[in-house]
Amino acid sequence: MDIATTRPAPVRNPRGVASAVAGGLAIALSVCGQLLAARRYATDVNAGHPSADQSMMHMLSVTPSLIVSLLAIWIGCSIRWDRKGHRILALLGITLGGIAIFLTFTDILGTRAAQYWIEPYPGGR
Image 1 (cartoon, rainbow, N blue to C red):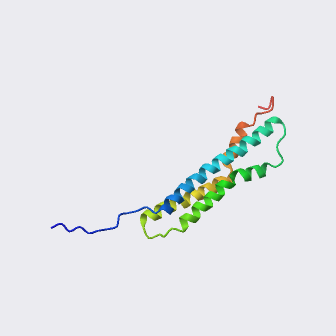
Image 2: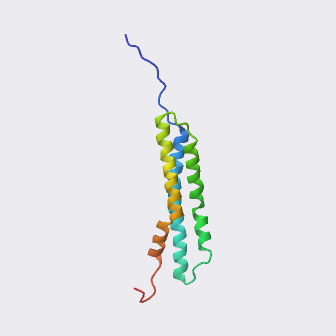
Image 3: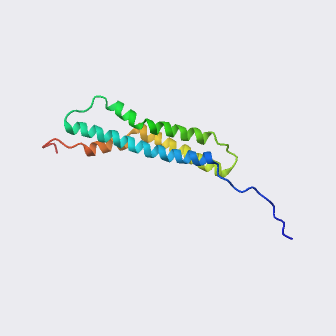
């Protein structure tokens, strides 16, 4: 005789998937915002008039990244931790959100891109 026990099918928590997707989106927004601010700054410097409100431009261009990364962390932390599949996706979303916040506040990519895009003065090399 075949006796099949019924177990509930493993289902991924949609909030876990949302947390992981939001974390990845936050990293993409952080990189794009940093590159946008660096490109604008390099263009202003190359034109001969560095903008006085560069910190405001940087802050406005990376604000969506901060909002989405905090959302990813909040969604990841609000998931029930009783199933392994839920934990993995939630931890992935929390980690990606933390990486996005780190990238945003350190501005490593934006600084290097601005240095690359700024043309040296004639005879400056």
